[in-house]
Structure formats: structure tokens, C-alpha cells
Length: 432
Ligand code: CMC
Image 1 (spheres, rainbow, N blue to C red):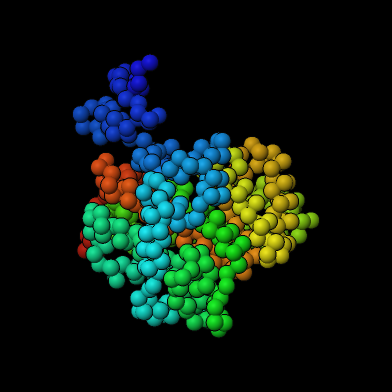
Image 2: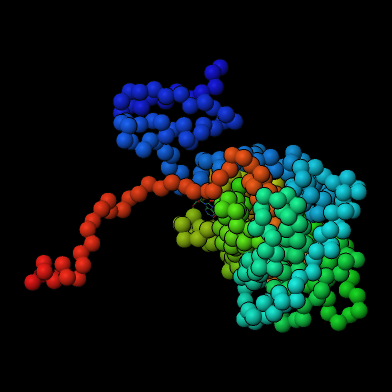
């Protein structure tokens, strides 16, 4: 079977061949389709990148119809069961799980880069007492760029690696500072004796007691949630990381942009919105009326639907199981009953069935985070911490890809083609 697409231009009956590779044709092959030599050539029009592959990537695989998610070929279910978040971060970045020696070295490096420059404390203090933690996170990531000017050497592998370690290590500390600032609590310095998640919990919740002891169940649940959120191929924030990174901006600035993209309610900000929605619904008996409003187009069911998954999001299934383990320690979050009933009703309703709308990662995560003691404002920050690994893996791949250049889409111009500017003098002459 020949591996090419034959295109006939009905405007002039000319025929063209476009080779097919990996189920795609090169958009640039369409440029030669012209009606006359002055013609610019054909482009594709694809608002929101519904059907455009912008890169080749070997990091994350999703089969949206089957509900499959794999990092570097490993099923997400297996990684969530057997690995730590830091091992998964290593896998995303290096393509292989670490050997025991590499694991030890990697953990040591991350642990020893969790401290922030003291100026960052003053920087965070400058925010209003009730500043949204995502605003603090985004701004502080950008501010870190000013502390590491060498980071702009994005083509130097050693410098790149140093920033990767710093970002994965420091984002958890920045997140904890943003949490403590909002609560008016003094910042807690990292503790190198603790694991990544235990250290994070220590920085969040340590009070004057001599030694905070993290619950091993909560620490492991947080670690699993971090694994589930670590990467998700070319989503809105990963695409942002790549677009900004393509201009050779340093990774701190690119990651600030990616985190900004994540904050939106249609992306990572959805977990915060789910909790607000469950609060608004208030009780199981109000669900049918709420679903009616969703179907009338008044509202969206937050935590439902996905651009790629047209089946159950595998992450949502794992999160539901983790929720039960967490509730054993924290007590049951009564919002779970509303969420379960909402899911049950929605999954039987034609509106959702026909549109293949299933719960996504954000539907149940907030309920666990709330049971752990987080306010909804922190939920998207908790998404951003592990997504740092994915953003950096995507960025590293981009920087080393010889096919990539600065991102620069085309447009279909729909404005006025040309007009002449009249000066005030000319206007006066005309109107006199
Ligand atoms: N509630 C009600 N209707 C929905 C929903 C929803 N959550 N999501 C999609 N639809 C409808 C939509 O109105 C449209 O209907 P119609 O064909 O009649 O116009 C149809 O389903 C197709 O939706 P779409 O908006 O064209 O789909 P999309 O691929 O552009 O959007 C989405 C994907 C995730 C932005 C969207 O499903 C949504 O807004 N969901 C709620 C927000 C949310 O939970 N976001 C988190 C996504 S997962 C975390 C992550 O970002 O990684």
C-alpha cells in the first residue's frame, strides 16, 4: 500500500502527493498547492489544535478511546502502585526508571536543592495576606529566573540538568511558602532527613512541636497523586511550556507561563472549581436540578469531559481508590457522596453518554485534598508541583529536537484589507 495522500485541487484539477508518516501529513506539504505562482499556498485552519501534532514525543502515551495512560511505556496503574514520585520524575526526564544507585543520587540531589534564597521570603511577604497561592507560585517561579542567570544557556546539557533539579526541588518549597503566607504562619525550612512528600508536609503543617511526624498513609497518598499528575502529553500547559521554551526563554520563565496556563478553570484550575460546584449543589437531592442546568447549557459539570479521553480517565479511577485509604485516616469527606451520585446520574444520562463525558483527574482529587486539610485555593498548586517533572521533560525534549524552531502559528486574516489614515488637517479640509 503506497504511503501517501493524493490531493486533487478542484480549483484547477491539479494533483499533489503528500507522504504519510506516523498517521500525519506535513502541513508544509500543503504549501505547494497553489492556483498561481503569486498564491501563498494552502494552510490548515485548526483553532485550539483539535487535530494538529506539533511535535514528536517519546514521553507520554494516551489512548483516549481506551482510557490508557502510559509514561515511557509503563502503565500509570503500575507506576502508581510500585514507584515513588521522584522515581517517576526521573523516568519522565531520562526515559528509564533509576537503578538503586541512580535513585539514591537523584533523591540526594533533589533533597539538597529544596532551599530557597532568603530574598524569596521577602518576595512572598510582599503579596497581600489573602493572595491566591497560584498567583504566588507563578510569580515566584518567574522570580527564580533572576537568581540563576546561567539558566538562559538552554543548549548546555549540564546547565539544563542543574535547573531541572532546582525546579523539581524548589517548586514544593515555593508551594509551601504560598500556603503558609495565606495563613499568616512563619515559613518552615526544608528538612533533608525527609522524603519529598514528607518534607512538603513538614513545610506545610509543622507547628511549634519539636518534630512534625507525617502520616505515612497521607504521605503515600500524596506521592501517588503526584505520580498521577506528573505528565499528560501535549495538554494546554505543556504546550505553553514548549511554545515559550521555543523562544529560548529560560526554564523558570517558561515554567511560570506553563503554571499560568494550568491555573485556568478548564485545565488544572478545574479541581478548585469541582469543590465549589459540590458546595453549591450542597446535597444529593439537588443533583437532578443541577444536571438539568448543565444540560440547558447554563453550567459545565466541572471535573467532567476531556479533549483526549472519550472513556473513563484512568487517573480518576486510581484517585477514587486512594480516597478510601485517605478517609480511613482523616474521616470521610461527605462531599464524596454527592460526587459519587453525580457521577452515577451523569454516566446514565444521554447528554453525557452521547458526548462521551466521563470524570477526569480533577473530579475526585479535590475531595481528597480537602480531607487532608487543604483549602480549594491550594488544589491547583498541588497539581503544579509534580507537573513540573512533565513540563521539564517536555521542555528538554523540545530543546534537543532538531526539527523544532520558534513556535509561530499562522492566521487567517479577517480584518480590513487596507485603508488610508487621514490626518486632522485632511479631515478639516474635507469637512470645511
Ligand atoms: N459539562 C457539560 N458539558 C460539557 C462538559 C462538561 N464538563 N465538557 C464538555 N461538554 C460538552 C460541550 O458543551 C460540547 O457540547 P456540544 O457538542 O453540545 O456543544 C461537547 O461536550 C464537547 O465539548 P468541547 O467543549 O467541544 O470539548 P473540548 O475538548 O473543547 O473541552 C474540556 C474539553 C476539558 C475543556 C471540557 O470538557 C470542560 O470544560 N470540562 C470541564 C472543566 C474540566 O473538568 N477541566 C479539566 C480537564 S482534565 C485536567 C487537565 O486539564 O489535565
